[in-house]
Length: 248
Image 1 (cartoon, rainbow, N blue to C red):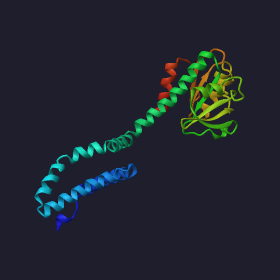
Image 2 (image 1 turned 180 degrees about the vertical axis):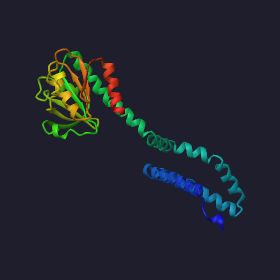
Image 3 (image 1 turned 180 degrees about the horizontal axis):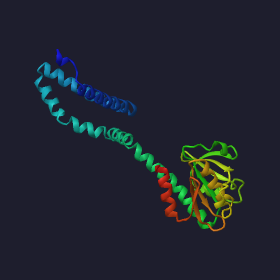
Image 4 (image 1 turned 90 degrees about the horizontal axis):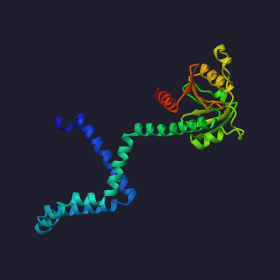
């Protein structure tokens, strides 16, 4: 009776086949292709009955059709098969899709900073990390919008009421604008930096965020992390710093 006890590999085999069949029948029902599948099942049943009853002419005729069943199935269900394979590929490559999405989002950020630096538009952008900045966000305005070049340029346009203060990026979205941040009291910086840069240093002293600053006077790009400011970055260096932060 040991042959009746399934092995572990048999269980895995059954589960995989069951998942595939479920997906196939679900997709066929959704697209209406189950009617064609029902036709194939009817032909198979006729072939089985003809074989049992020894109906030689019917058996020969259906045997000829049987040789082309696989080809006919592939041709008739080509869109459905493509959808199934595409769905499997999407599920397998979720991590890659997430990385591509993040890359696309931050390319918008880098492009916006590049334009603001060229036009000498002052900006302060904070990328939130594990330490939430809720106590500062309360001082601003929550927007929770997708990152885009146009939106960032609009926010920091000095003709809008939102340009003062910082933009907070949370979960790859512009979460809040016009946020007031604490100024650094580090003597090393207070004598040489303006308010925007001191705010960037100050918030990075109190959290694990990453701050990007564009100088309104010079157009130079700076970043702060852990209370330390790095000034005069090129757009390529900024892009690399953002990638490093996103990957950490």
